[in-house]
Length: 344
Image 1 (cartoon, rainbow, N blue to C red):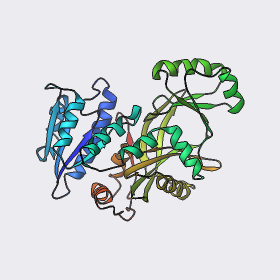
Image 2 (cartoon, one colour):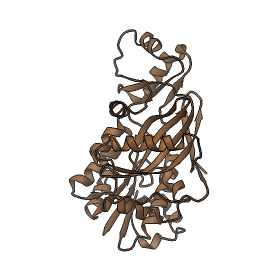
Image 3 (spheres, helix red, strand yellow):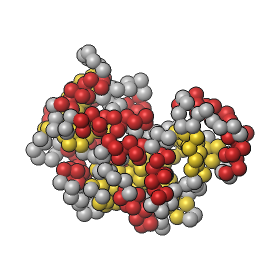
Image 4 (tube, one colour):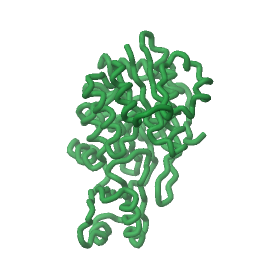
């Protein structure tokens, strides 16, 4: 069985951002380290030539077929499509921003390949934060009060926002990952300037205004298949908050009085999305009234990197069974804690 494990940033698709490159490589390295231990799999990946020296140091280097970018003709997408054609199964690690993850999965689906993860349709749905909030609301799940605004903005939009949302409020892009573009506005005077900044960064695209939920930022890691869900861990998210939010890392597991309630709510959220599969994260805030769902991430994230350090078995094997055999494993036993910090 030939398996392509493709990580967007370390493949050199956006080689001008060193932080994202290193973050992507850390996720790819963790996944490759686990999948290479599953018997009967022939593993391929795509890497930018700048990490050739680094790859010499990893113990599995001679057991992975690597296609190097930055050395030949064609775009990154051309190379991805070529690699997809040569494999049986694809695992894609990429941000949801601007529909990227759904697009890459869609390529694999159209070529008749098995995807180790959610369908492109499910990814597209949860990548749209407005549609996700609407779906979760219809299932009676706790979410922040949210309005979707589109450019050109309606007249008196500032007054409408101030009337409907007590300060502080949250502005965020409809699609995005890692907290990028998320702003916390504490003063109505700052609102107009923030929206102009948002428009300048994102272009004339829709954005969300949400009530601010005070509490602790967490996530729940899950395995999902065919409408079945097993929550794996409650994770503490380390987020620096000024006017913009910056994701700094994650600690797994996290003990909290609302832990079981958060696991249950995350499970119900995943059950609500048709086509969701594989490794899925649900972001929540543990507030005074209980857990509130922020979004669903249908992809491998840095939570995988931390989780594999506290799980006593090969976590990739669990992921393989979940996606290939639609068979959920028992919840893993977690030993100790592990913190992954961005840039460390």
